[in-house]
Image 1 (cartoon, rainbow, N blue to C red):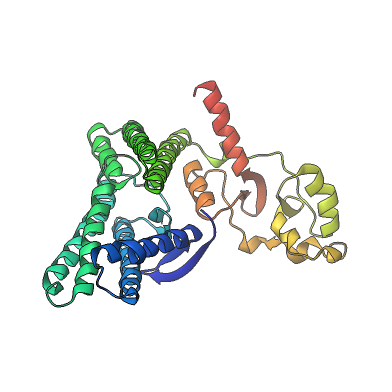
Image 2 (image 1 turned 90 degrees about the vertical axis):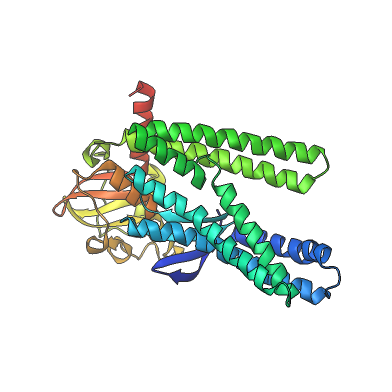
Length: 372
């Protein structure tokens, strides 16, 4: 996804919109105001088509947000931490920091989304029945939102991972078998099969004249296939890092830099030669901080020769660190959640090693090549 902007904070959860959401919002609004409502209600004035179209589009995405909030609030109730909710081109996604550790937890977190969409559809359906006799615009808005939210619920109940229905399927298989990896594999197969059907459907529509709808269906299928494969790989990674400690992953091949060096010396003697993006700053084996490439880039080029490392480094007290005994899965989750590329491994305030994302990738590649 591209750039995101935070637009609200609800129940302690950041609500963001991705740049791709702007595209789909405009497209849906244009379709509603320029085609759907004019076809259904040709007697309306143009301004009324656009007013109802914009209002319907806004409420539709508010419904998507409510769907994701339902997932998030149940996750929080189950003891999980939700980082944010992001609206993007395919709807919305709640960023939950860790995968559920029990099948029952996953089932509840997954099923609540479609149920919330059905509840919203029911509310708008009742509103349509109440107001259609005396307010045609409100009735038209309510009818469309009832139908679209029911469609969202049914779509998400398709038993293909990572859709909610696929997660429900995984939870059921997981609960019966006790094997998360096997359950994810089966749900992923279903997800890839359904994605393939979407792509076939899209190609068929393209060749029958529905070019835009066909491309959209094929694009959805492609997205579902990639997401399904990615979801299974994440479980494989969790399995591979099970019972693995940071000491098994960290690198002892690292070089510290002195806090008295200049930025120019760091660039010439370290960055350009070793090509690492971060260097621990230490006095002997005593960690004082870390300097990263973005710290260097924040200093104007003309000041590199006069600016010392200690002036721009992230000091020890502000550093996120790990110990050699920390769990590999927990540390990887932290790195992904906080978008951290490397972490110092410390014992007390002594630097014992460096854990880089590349170290974890290399570890997994070697085990995979050995068939472990």
